Every structure is written in structure tokens, then in C-alpha cells.
Image (cartoon, rainbow, N blue to C red; front, side, top):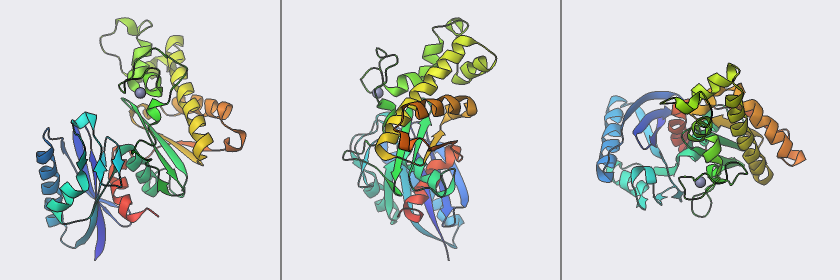
Length: 303
Ligand SMILES: [Zn+2]
């Protein structure tokens, strides 16, 4: 019988859920809105999983790997998710009692990194770091093939590394001057809005800023360069601690591609400890499915 696992990526607005075979094939995928109420959310996830199991009677389901936007301990206990309005909760217990399957839980950025290591741009590597640059900046750190969670599940919170840029801008975490206040989509837009033509525009996206830079707007270029320099300096700091062979850049802002990668790499090589200089930089490949692959990877890929 063919073995497969469910990967579930719980986000603030939607839940992505897929069935992935042991060989890494995404057999099916569904996406549905996140329920406001905790219990209703777990009921809905369990019902969706059961319905898929009914459609794949010949597949032996080994387990369920779940990603959540918050710190997780022992691949079970979620210590809280601001986006979901959750306090501390044992997600593994909630789902395994509904499904009679083993359930492992991880922080969503860590899970996406594992997904990329197993089936995406990180294949063949056991020491890698992925930065997810979107509304905020998240990161996952894998050292010697293992996800680093830290003592309160907060390892890899690279978005909150203090940076010498916009040191008075406040961050969602309560501090000021974090990496994500400059380098996230939100930060890029905020910085661009200090300049024409963005100042008077009703809605600005990070893509607008990259497009303007590409078209030769110097202010937009400065904003892009600053975001890249920040990300590069942060990767240099991370590099000095965990010495990965590969950095992946994912998330919505990574659609800018080379335009973002180049300033990151330049800043990295400038600031990192010399023996770490040869780390490779690449774009993540799995997009929104990275968390689903990572969920299955918790059973099929981890050492
Ligand atoms: Zn912060």
C-alpha cells in the first residue's frame, strides 16, 4: 500500500491542506477560510482530512503535520497565535483525538523551510535557512537536518533582529527598528510613501515599488536597496551563528527575484565572517505549498 501524509498550513485567513505521498507527490489539495472559533477550526480540518481519506482508500495515511503562525514546543503545544487569537493549546491532542492519527505540529516558517529542504529549492542540503519576506519577515533554521525550535519555540524569529535602519519605527512585536519594519512588504511600502510618487497614491504595493525602481526611480531604488541591505545584514548575523550552506528567500516579496537577491547577497558577503562567505542564495520554489510539503516532511524527511 502507498504511504502518504497530510500537510496542513493554518494561516490567519485560510487553511491549506494537502495529501503528499512518501515520494513527495502532492496528491490533492484544498484551501478553506480559517474558522474564527478554535473548536470549529479543528472540526473543519478533521472533516476535510476524513473526506480526502475516503477519496483515497488505497493510500495508507501515516500522520498529519501541521504548521501554525506561532511558537510551538515538542511538536505539540502551541504557545499562542496572535493572528488566530489563540492562547496556549495542544494542537496535536486536539487533532489526533478527532482523527486517530499521529499529529506533529511546527511553526509555519520552520515547516515551509523543511518543505523546501525535502521537495523544493533546498534539496540535497542539511544546513539551510529560509527567510519568508511577505507582510512580515519570518525564518526557518535547519541545522544538520533538524529544525531549530529553541527553548520557547521562538528560534528563527529573524523578523525581529534589531537593525540600524528606521530605529524609531515600531514593530508589531512591541519593539522598534526590527528587520521586518524595513524589509517586509509593509516596511517597503511605508518607506516608499515618504517619496513622490508614492506619497499621494491611495494604495501602494511592494511590487509597485520594485517596478518603479526597475523603471529608474531613484527613491524607489533606495528603498529596495535598503530592504536588501537589511536582509543581507540579518543573513550575515544568522550565518555567523549557524553557518548554513544555503539561504532561501521566499514569500510574496521574493517575486522581485534577482532585484532583491543581489543586494542581499552583496550585504551578506560584506558583513559575514569570512569562512561563511561562500553560502549560496536562491529563491524558494514551492510557494504557497511549502507548508503542506513540510507537514508531510515531518514524517517522511526528518532525520
Ligand atoms: Zn519586531
